[in-house]
Image 1 (tube, rainbow, N blue to C red):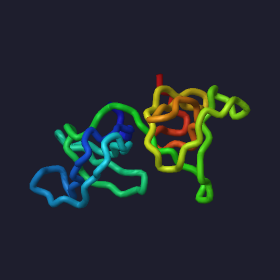
Image 2: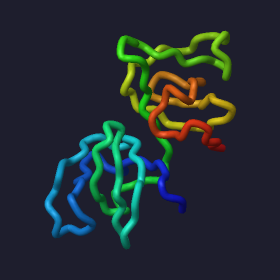
Image 3: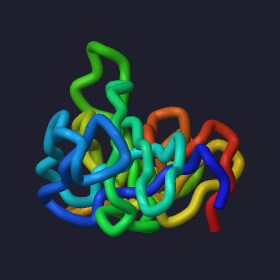
Length: 139
């Protein structure tokens, strides 16, 4: 598989280590399954990941899932981010979500992604997501 690539955390407790083995000390622990992370390097069964804040470290591949998720992001002053019924900003609004909400990515094409979450299912501008590359097509 290509590197870099996005994946998500499989578990609610994922230790991030300073090196690629269990002998290396734990740098921090993630506490949210489904959180998107970017794989930036690989060594045997270990993956060096980067989170949305740019922090990086090593996790065992068993703690990662190929399921695509993304963090909703917006401008510093944005309280909510619009999610539309169709892939067009003039469409009907189906939800307004807060920045940092985790969404499942269903597909992306031509600058829009279909996402879903606990109480929403619709389209969002691809540039408002961390967990997909700017022009990435996901089917």
